[in-house]
Length: 508
Image (tube, rainbow, N blue to C red; front, top):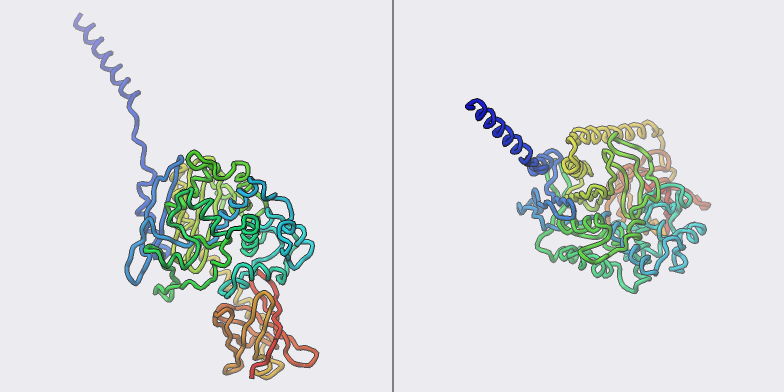
């Protein structure tokens, strides 16, 4: 009998142990446990003064924090509320406004822009009458960037809009993806014409206020009144040098002028993850927002740089690809040293935004942090993106250096310009790009300023000179007119092509 009781007791104890094992819930590891250490290590690794991070998951703000310094000289730390210009991440806001107008019946995605704005004019007549609102915001109009039309120029939005007709297209409409800020400016002008309000007022009323983005701003004068914004920096031989704020980005606002902070940008990601709904209100119709999120054009060149990344396409204000098998929407931003990246995974209810105040690391820092957080929240083993991107950075620098060396071998030695220095000096003008003045300097060189940005020209060969400063390595090909005098110069501008500036006055 004693043996029987012992046996029963043993069984009961065993069953109790099994029950306890079944009901015990293991404590889940915090996926962000090492995030602070990682971000701080990345600041050092990539030499970034300051950054701000926000993470959303399952409809909520999961994490937000500032790192490093917003003001190096004053030793002021970045806070979660610190404002950063988000640059081209602004494009998703402009596309969302178009989606709202489409839902209201004020805009048809596929109707020619010319039907809405009679003064919309591109250099090519077929493109002028064909391009639609959808095309304006999906980078497929055939117009290359031509960013030097607006960068540092003393021009307002309407003036820039009027100059579109003087800019040559480099491709037929729809032929190829060509990232373009000026077409987003045109989309902003379209929004203003259809609503009778400025693009800025539309952003404030339709997006900022409903989302509680009360600290987010749209112009630099507003930013300078804030008590908490980050200065931007360039790495000048190991010393941080302020970049300044002269880009004229506010004029081209619909393409890149929003200034925001990490938690308020998190609200923007949450709106997209919730298919346009905020609280109990549908701010953007789900069907129209889906148009923004639908691939419109293949990103060119069509390369997959890492095996974890799928081929990229562009929707309207969003890049679209896959990351380790997960559908991903993202956009980067770059202006005056600031770099930003926002990412969300619609099928996983996860989003990340990273804001920084230097371009010295290009997009490697923001990419490394976003990918690290994505790996953690998607429950995947972390990839050492830092080492990969360091290698990619080194390869890119090597490629640039090799291109310089290759250019040097093409130079014809022992050649001379066809004219004396005063023959090249003078004012040169283009109807869209504006003008610059060349002044002769010692040893056959010239100095000039374009939109207030200084550059020099050094003789390359024959009547071709090479630029430094803002026109670093840019070739200036001077041409002779029927009178035998220099009457124009063709400037080979990156992401624009050959732009002809006519000589309007000789320099005395």
